[in-house]
Amino acid sequence: MELLQQLTETRLGLYVLLGGFGVVTTWESLRPRRAASASTRRRWINNYLCLVVNGLLLRWAMPASAVAWSAMAADRGWGLLPGAGLPAWAGLALGLLALDLQGYGAHALLHRSALLWRVHAVHHSDVDFDCTTGFRFHPLEALYSSTVMLLVIAGAGIPPAAVALYTTWLGLQNLYGHANARLGAALDTALRWLVVTPDMHRVHHSAQSDESNRNFGIVFPWWDRLFGTYRATPRHGHEGMPIGLGWRRHEGGLPELLLLPADTRVSGAPEPG
Image (tube, rainbow, N blue to C red; front, side, top):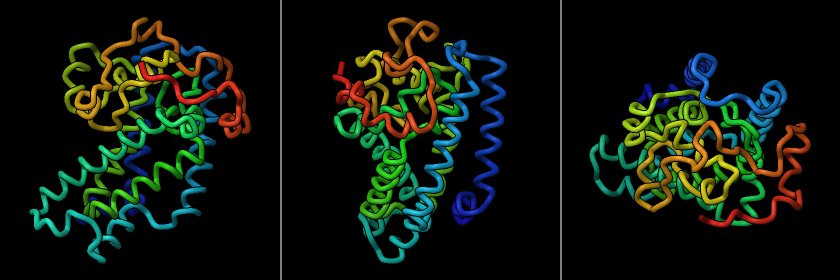
């Protein structure tokens, strides 16, 4: 359990994510799922800048990591799980499920609230879909997602080991789930019972609202099936489906992304299909 905490708290976690990035980008170059429709260079610059800005903001606004926060909550006896008398393995499993369920719920709310959708539209504004799309979030969304997670960690009393494992897994899943890479139909179908696959999440990035309002899952795919928000394939196929916001077909710069929530064309949350 201590090793899992060290994975996130030290540079080892960073090395794991950098290694994952190398693996996924290599996979994308060898077996791309779709051809790029816009300048990859400009998109990547914007997506990397979003990652840097959000990292600096969260480091300033939330100096304690999620693992440190969960350790403090455990020391103070906060939450439901510590009082349940569960064995360590059960606390770990329930903690992972609780963290992923909150991710699903927080993500679905971003699509249901007109105000939150304006912020989340930055993520959906990417005109292509690859592993760097997982870096493309407005700073306000980064604060929202982190705050919700910390509240759930404290309220549920999720153990630090579960938080360490999930946050590292989440970083790798963010790369893998947004990969512009081909899995193969049989493997994709099998993996969808265990984790969200790139094809499953790509449907969520469709410019069609009845498709972008599906597949909210973060790591585990079960919540979408359980709550009726699962969609297997886009109507135009993965090669032909339009990606993004529909009206935004050209990549601007970082200032445009940061000001996108105020754009009049981002008019409320997309209607559920």
